Amino acid sequence: MRSKAVWGYGDDFLAQVREQLRIRPEEVLVRRVAVAEYEGRAVGVATLEGEPPEGAFGLLFVEPELLRCGVGRVLYEHVLTRAGILGFTVVNVAADRHAVPFYRAMGAERSQVADAADLVGFHAYPISPEPSWVRAWNGGTRPVMVGNVAEFHGQFTGVRAEPDHYSCLAAFCGPEPAKVLLPLPVADWWREHVAETLGWDELAVGALTERSIGPGVRPWGWTSSWAPQHCELLRAVRHFESKRHANALFHELAGQCRGIVVPAQRSLRSARALHKELAEGGRVVLKREYGAGGSGTMIVSRETPGLYRLLREWSRTGVLVEEYIDGVSTGRDVTFDAVIDAQGWVYPVGVAEMDVAGTAYMGATVGPGVVPRDLDRTASRFAMMVGRVLSRWGYRGWFDVDFVVTAAGALAPMEINLRLTGPAVTFHIRNTLDRLHGGRHFVRTLDCLRIGARLPDPALRAHVGGLVESCRALGVTLLVTIPTAAFDPAPYLGIALAGRSLEAIGAAEAEVIRRNGDLWRVVSARIPQNPNGFSDGVVH
Image (cartoon, rainbow, N blue to C red; front, side, top):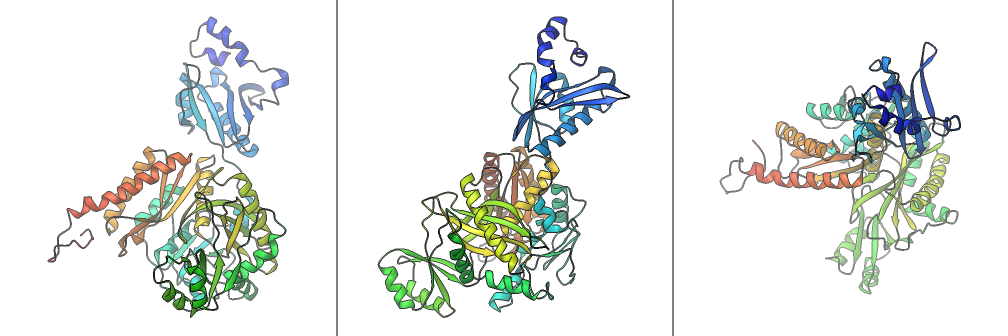
């Protein structure tokens, strides 16, 4: 009452609110009362009310003579810490208008005006304890991340793959890395942008040729170069990255898990026979034994242009024919990610919704409720069974299992990836931002957003700055994940969008796409025309 009275309220008003501010003995535990003490006397009180995931600061008051001495901060931080431990993701505040500067200084975010005309609404976001999978992944150290994406995929095809900019995603697969080893150079502005957005001191980048093999090294995927002493591990990778062996394992495990439907699969024996089969209607999926991100996978039907010629070409290299699964119209593709630690324990990370165009992976979305609970549970249960098999085979590291949601609401497992993946990046970015800003973020990664011109670094940096500000105005954080591809023949950016709601992220995505499209009209007026009358698409 003394604390409330300090703002000059009259006796009549204070009499009206006395019962609202009273703490009865039987409420001390229920309302999770915290008391700040100084030299043996109570100098502040706060309550955390409600049940997870959403709670409220019921009270937060400080003895008037100790206002602005840090007591309020101690109580605020204590309540949020406890809220995070108990599983709250947001704590609402209905603040006296005189306390607005305090809550702003604490980092709380304004919400709509509270019910009472003289109160102002805020959201405070507690920081939850770090998930167990994080330590299982990095071993409690700052890892060295290795962007050996091309080398990993090349080990299955026997063809040396050219390094590309996708390897930049390795920078985000963990806490602040000691160093990131990449096959191509990156601009200083991008390193600064990443460090600032994620609260890191710096992003140290080295060349992929810096061989650094040890317990703190995390390659994108295991190869003989990065796991020379782990024959058992490499054997597991080669076996279960195979679409054929993965499908066989799925059939073996499906009977132990309700809600799982495994597509039939067979070898392509005759291009002519399959062409005749498709002429009668229907679709099938052609799969090469190894492939990533949709490469080596194609959906074909009798309407596919040049079908017979295509089947003959594919049949020369050994192809699998898989039953096509009719899926739901939205949320069709989901994935479950997990980590197997050095002792062989499997730690679940979570389930994400993937954006797949045809068979090509484009990005993923994670966050509370993105994947319906029943699908989340089924995917988790089945993929954890897969993880235990991988562990027995000697695999250690990150893996995922990809699914298609059938029209009947079951899950059809498609493949196993024994490496880091695009969705792994999404999970790591969410965890980093949750630790930095509190609460539970929604994060959407978009790995290939076309931009309207090939931009050198200064122009690209200016364009990204505009995107960051536009998204910030919508309450969304934008992080560039793949920067240097902006000078490719078909220029693009990879980005991650993080916010407190899917609606905000959707609005930010639309704004980014619009601004990327407008970029061509902006720059084309400044580009000299060549003798043929066409601009070369490069800002000079």
